Length: 459
Image 1: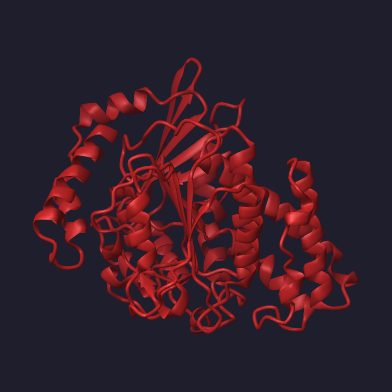
Image 2: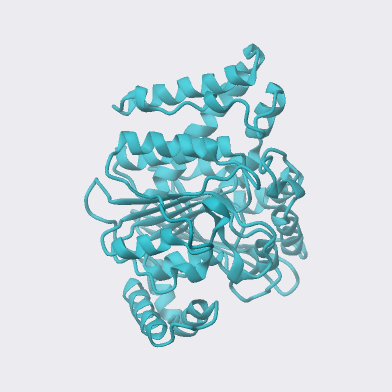
């Protein structure tokens, strides 16, 4: 399948070079038209070859609104299969809850982005609807070593937040070593060789329509721990809305293995071609900025932002038509083996914690990237749980952040890193998203919706 994907990218690049003024979305149109169709017998053969420890889950909505689930798991003795259908209309109820979960909130475009929990009710409904059906599907899975789950849910359910869902009362990020959104059956590529990947990093300093100061601390810590990161810091800001960072990426794209974008999603977008990530000086990275970029050695692209805004909600109305987050699709089309993004905005404090922990784990553990993300989410969840337990002892938000800083330093030492290189969060105790109320800050950051927003697309 990766060979087919390479041919698609090559054909798309040839099209772009021949039509440099092609309209927005030309890349997406080309990929949809060139994407190879897979025969039923090819799919069945692929499913029979799933290795032990891997689980594939297919999800769709039937004509009567029933939720259709199919699980195939690899086992030492062959493969395990289970199919089920929920009562009528359950699939429609799941779809409605998903739409409520993805709907933009007024706070999404303020410095308080991600600090409230208006989506908590929709997420609770979604978990309640899917807990039983998923629990039944996974109840008889082979036990043993940790399993990696890949979900294929094309169409209206493509954006379901699998890390946040539960099966039989167990959160999936605790049930599986990793959970990935599979772009198509058979998608995948081999892991990149070498344990010192070349990293390209671009940061969007934002304080008006969001908050990224904690993210700046996390990125500074990672650069100190692992020198050699190619930091995109445009010196010329006189070129208006030009995305100099994407031009810099194109210059080194042949050698880069990790691309990291950190910022906030573009506010008030309803057109897929304008979905984007806000960078410094009010500029926005959108899909067309990556048109023609190829990343032949890229193992992952990280978007530390929820880039869909209203477009994520609109994508759930397309019925059977499959719609990806546009920046995710552009990264996969460019050659990335996997893509990390967020389904909705979360508190920058939580996002920075996950970014830093993932950046360390992925360099210190010899595991696939999505497994390192799953580990980071579980570790941050445990850290926040202890933080919530200690919260009554904090006499200020500065003390609350200082406690997290000490936890970050402890983890750095455990990983054999210099704890003195950890950039402190407590320096920004006066940030608007922190406020002055310790219980409110802790309650917001420990809400299930925070860690549930992270997604991994690809292999």
